[in-house]
Image 1 (cartoon, rainbow, N blue to C red):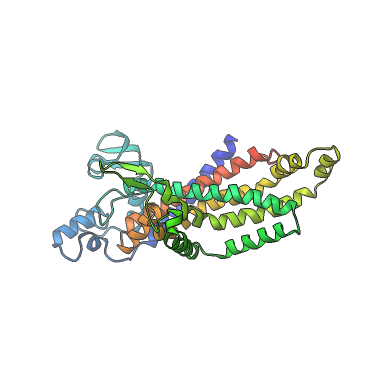
Image 2: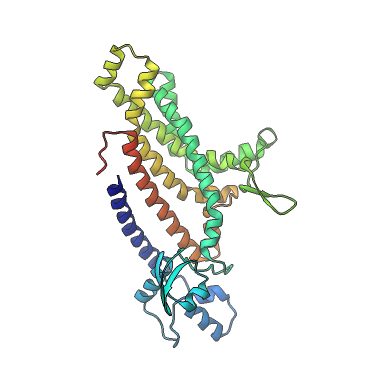
Length: 354
């Protein structure tokens, strides 16, 4: 188990390194960052200071080559780093540093500062992360709680109206884009039927009381979570049905029936357990997808998460926030894939953990 996790972590670090390089070069050439930071007004001295802070020029005013800019960026976003004492104070880096003027350190990744708010990108994204995680977990719970029983029911009741209805509904769910379903659901349940549902068109995961304190507001979570959970629900239903149909035809299932075991025990304890591997793949894969798919859903419903922060940053050309969002999303993809490999061995002992 430890060997597998170590191997996957090393592989994940290589993938993440590739993402960092890709993100860095992808956002090159989108205008002069110093001009975006200070706007259309500002003297040449201010612009030079900003360009130096962004590693575009050195202290002598000479342009820094792209590969050196990339090394500076990797050093900033990497937890393991080398920074001068001046950089640590200037960037307000958090971590453990040892050494003289040039210090070796283990730090919280420095994703640089927002062009617009001048705040650390890490703080901006960490403040928005709970909203996105809450939305993704709620959507996936809806998909799992409804999708797996529905898939099992469709397989057990094969070629009946229950099976046909489940297959038809899942096809519709797969075909419907989240942003389209979001608009429909928002209009029907948040506007037309709002007096009956008590739900609103848009709202954050928190409310602010009279004392200025944040309070959790799960009421606003319902519509975006349902919207985001429709597609994974449809996928999980289809996969559960297909896997169950294969397992129900196996010899050991017929043997279990021949021994007089209750049908419910055979289906839910023996058959479902051995049919869960492809479903786990879908759940873990779609949970990672939900973190990316939440972008438009958050924007539509005004949900305060990484998605909405990123879309707002794109509108304002705030590229450090967008770059940081991509890196954090990629990290979650890697961690969730590692979790999926571990779960395979827990659910199905036939999977050898090498």
